[in-house]
Image 1 (cartoon, rainbow, N blue to C red):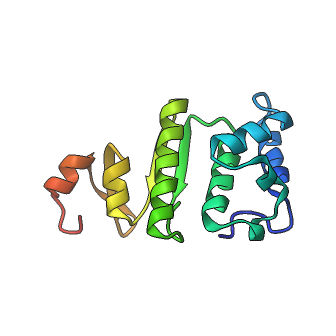
Image 2: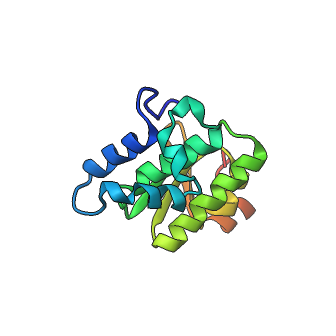
Image 3: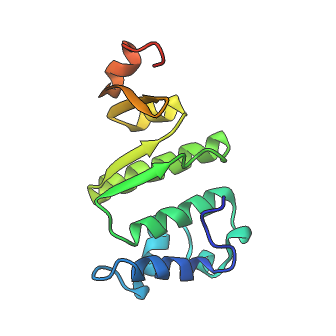
Amino acid sequence: MTALNPLMRINAQIVEAIALNPGGMSDTDVPHLLAEVGLEPRHGERFAHQLSGEQRQRAMIAMALAGQPDILIADEPTSALNLITQQMVLDLIAKICNRRHMALLFISHDLKAIEALCSRVAVMYQRQIVETGPAAEVFRTPRERYT
């Protein structure tokens, strides 16, 4: 909810992300980034408070894509969203990662989302990784009590 600058329009924030990652995209790519995350170009002219929670998440994903990353780090991307919107955002993240052949580091307390989205899992307890492995295996036969 607080990752977007409330004083800047969404377009300007995406342009800023492009400027921080020179050599790839240009300002003219902003409408394409918005479209890729399911936002109409008019949403780029708005401020964060004028967007729904889902639209803000989509705008954040567009900003992340502006850097043309090899890996997308999503830290609790659905924590403030309702269940239907959560699923829409998770589907969007999965589609973008597949389409761009991009890795995903998904950080969440939502075990159902992790199980549905991730192929490998690392379980942390008190800032330490206590278990890792294929998601299906970790969920089927956890080795650690905390898991």
